Length: 165
Image (cartoon, rainbow, N blue to C red; front, top):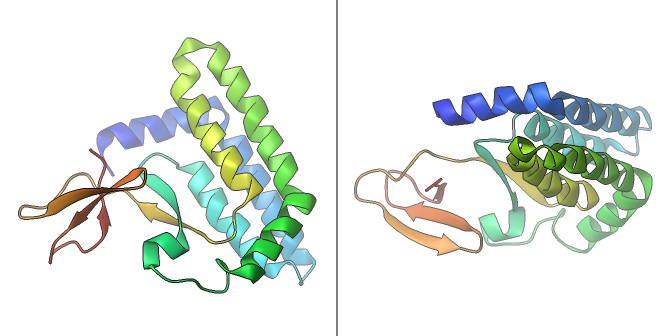
C-alpha cells in the first residue's frame, strides 16, 4: 500500500469511516446470530474490512473478475441481494449517504464523500462482489488495458493485477 493510501485511510478513519465499518460489523454479527444469515454475514464482514480501509482496494463483480458465474453471481445471488436489501442494505446505504452529505459540505471531505457514495451502492447489492487490492503500478513488460472502470495489467509476472494509474 502506498504512502498516499495510508494517509487517506488514516484520514478516512478520523473522519467517520470507523463508524460505518462498525455498522457493517454489527450487520455481520446480527446476520451470524440468526444462523441462516451466515452467507450475508460473510459478505458484510468482508465489506466491513473494505469500509475500514477503502483506499488501495476496489470492489469488483466476481463474475467479471473471474469470467464465469458462481453461486453468488447467479440467480441465487440476486435473491440473496434482494433479501439483504430489505433486511440491512437500505439502512447501511442510508448511513453512507448521510455521512457523504456531511463530508461533501466541507470541501476537503469531497474525496471521502465520494468513497461513501461508492460504499452506499455496495451496501444495496453486496453479494457477488469481491474486494481486491490495487497494485501501485505495472511491472516492467506488462501490457495495460482498460476493462470497465478499472485498469488491468496483464503479463506473466502479474496476471490480472489491478493497477492504480
